[in-house]
Length: 491
Image 1 (cartoon, rainbow, N blue to C red):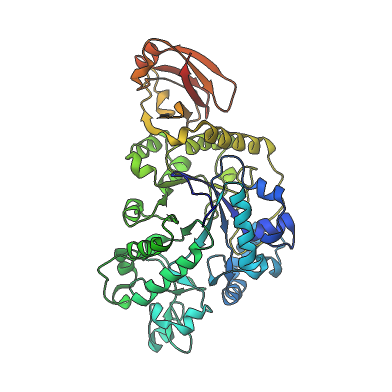
Image 2: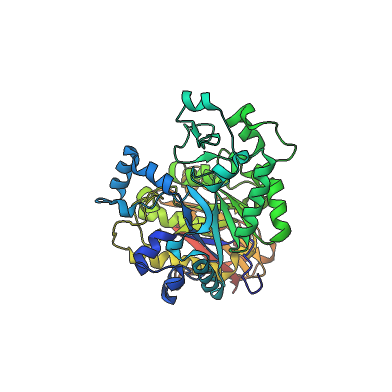
């Protein structure tokens, strides 16, 4: 649409649980009634897009299944003590229709939200769930040809795996490694009719937003789908699902962004199939559970590939960063993520240190005291990185050299960015001990003159000779989980 912001090549995305945010912030109001200061709050400087998670019409049938599930009710009570049935909206990923929920203001409310974001130069992302729909979706009765099907014997023998709608027996949704999900039915990625319906649905969604985050996108790939469903899916098409779908949608919406939730090391394959971005779950796991050396090895991948990854420390599927990371480590990891190539994803509540991981079924969350210092840190980080222009430059991983009697350099991750906005250096101590190293800077133009290194998120300032920076390298001495985020300019 004319007048809409075009997302940058490496967008910064802010995820908002829409129903929770509205209920907490503006009580019973809809997206059309959100005051300006609340739109400002979820678009801090440096934000390029807001992902309004969970705007589509949820399934009453799926909600009823959730209400009857003891394990889910236990999880709801754990996250929200005293939870009532009024707090349980049903899963955001058990979708009945791709129509904005009337409780949120319907399509008109979403249009107002999009305009408010656009007025701030911010794009809008929405969800798409390609693998399954709710059992009470109109598709389930009107278009059984869209689904993986069974027969009456399947429904009798395996009621947990198949649903008899009265018109057809449909497989329940699943992935190849887990039992079927009880509240959804399985779309057939190989069915030409389903592919056409997906193209039509995404084309309509593309009129309402700037991009989609595609849930569990790898499940629709031909090889994965074959492994999951075998002969039940029918003949394997010559073309994979995503190239056919994305190419067709782009004929109507050439700038529409496709981001894949992806696992199982299929990120590169999905990029080749047309996705602009794929989740970088490997980086998340390495930051949380492995060493700095493991993180550094992951960052040795090709820069073009990395520019099409989504970096994050939490999202609605993962535990809160404030729960999984100690405060100093979380800050160090945030500096790392904010300065890497690729898209970055931040989750509403992450900046204020929320610790409760809320199930996507709920539209209310417990009160938690905000960490205002943490919020200031994150917002200053985003603004500094954005304002510097460093993400528009060419990124390079740098070596950090230690000494034979001091291996603390192993905890350091160093990188630089070079472009029209200037030269920038990031060094993060991703370890719990003091770390020293020398880091040669690969900029021949440093020459022999004097250079100023200035902190972007703190007040530090150093003067160093170009000959030293090029030769033995910049000497750094960082405390546990410390960092340098520096601009480098002629003195």
